[in-house]
Length: 239
Image 1 (cartoon, rainbow, N blue to C red):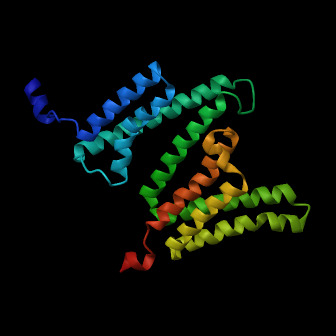
Image 2 (image 1 turned 90 degrees about the vertical axis):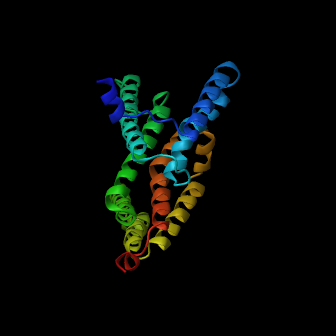
Image 3 (image 1 turned 180 degrees about the vertical axis):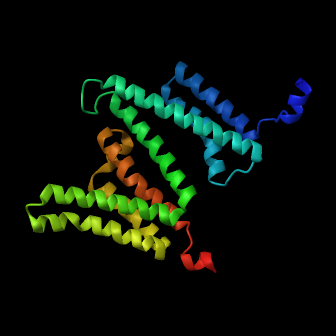
């Protein structure tokens, strides 16, 4: 019985990057608990670095079996981490209707987790152009509804507030025709939003509310822009 199991699931030596990552993770945890928690950055490099390099296509050290196992483990981690974050937020803010205090950083991590999963799933299912254009249509629709609800008694003000929504709709149209141009414009829009709303403070964790805006608003724009820069125009795909 044991020999049959060994034939079906043969022992595989861990990849070099995995071994190095495990050593960095152990060193980061040890130094973080004994010296300074800043050393936990080493654990981040060790735990997530090899996977990031593989997803970027810069590291090719996994066969099909290892890739499937890693993707399945990642999905399980997403389900477990997301569920735990929701439970923690609910427990911390039960009886209230606001999101502040200790619940805010947990909500920030949950937003990163959920948006990463959502956009990755859309890219895999629809491709870069349709995923980005759908995201832009959703953004434009929400912005338009908010503008109408906020200033419906002032037609001129409502028109001015609705201009960004028209820009989102135009970029959604452009994503199918000239994806690389649309991607460049999305990256520029993300940079402009960071400057206009002073979201640079989010990088230093000085204002977690701005960090939430950075993740929920700028994050999808930047992700869509990067995806579109790597996409090919429709004429190239059908050629």
